[in-house]
Image (cartoon, rainbow, N blue to C red; front, top):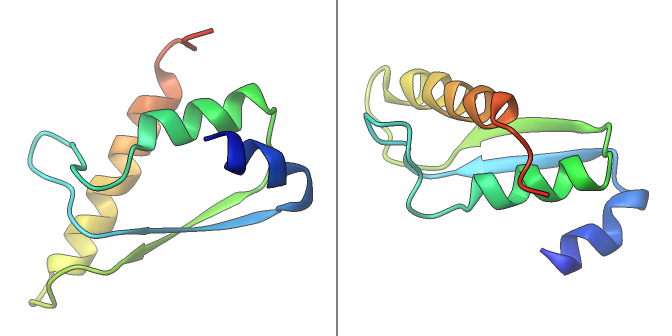
Length: 82
């Protein structure tokens, strides 16, 4: 996360690509808790843009984006770890 923290002063937009959010709102590929904590500690005020990169099936992308937003909201409400 230190590489991310180093560039955040120059970043206003992050493409929040992801592959799979399970039924328990867990992502086994992307460490969202660590990413959001890094953004929080840096007092970053930019935008995250969701982009689903997983399996293409009817309605799956829409459901996956909904799950990612629910996951990010839950992590955002969680107390800071510092």
